Image (cartoon, rainbow, N blue to C red; front, side, top):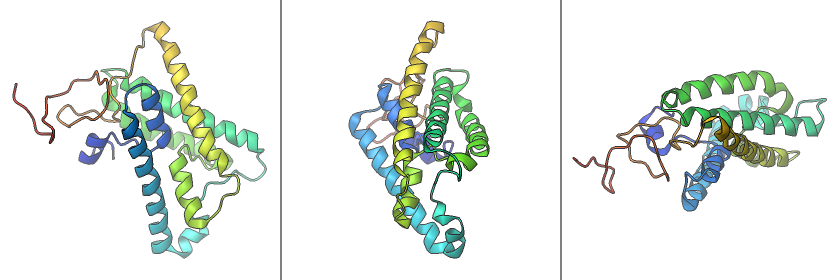
Amino acid sequence: MAISPLGKLSGAHINPAVSLAFWLQGKMHRHDLVGYIASQILGAVLGAGLAVLIWRERAASVHNGVTVPGVGYPIWSVFLIEMGFTCLLVLAIFLFVSSHRLMRWTPLMTWMLVALIYWQAAPISGASLNPARSFGPALVSWFWYDQWLYYLASPIGALLAIVLFRSLSLVGINDVLTAKMFHAPRYRCIFKDVKAPLLNTDQHGKLIEP
């Protein structure tokens, strides 16, 4: 998604925790943050609804994709897992998009990291890392037991990642260069304080010759 034309235009956040982190870092306008989160939640609800409508029994066999704590794990440990792994994900994204050398590899890194996190955390917490991803199936299934932790843990993890990232200024890491998961200079950018290369465009996103 990040390297598709739509992803190059939107930034392919998909996750409200990621958008929140970019906003806290001063890379998004407030109205854009609201629009992104609303779109992410709506997309999750539509996706979950379509999955239930199309797959029916198969969707029901995996509880319509609802994220729930693993059996036998205390709720506080599930909360810490979701918070910690969201923090790791956001911090890794920030480290990559703060480097001219690494930023082009952000989608590949994210893909590998999320796969690793799912492998380790899915039996414990369901490895949501994304409030919208948990909200969609929960709404479609009308299942709210322990769902609060998925709506709190990830944003707190994103906030913690911001604190850790800013502390890295002591070792020469200064700021995020772009709020896109894959930065393409020829694509129009709505984000604030972008320090990655951009080509001049008009209000319709068409290139303006220098």
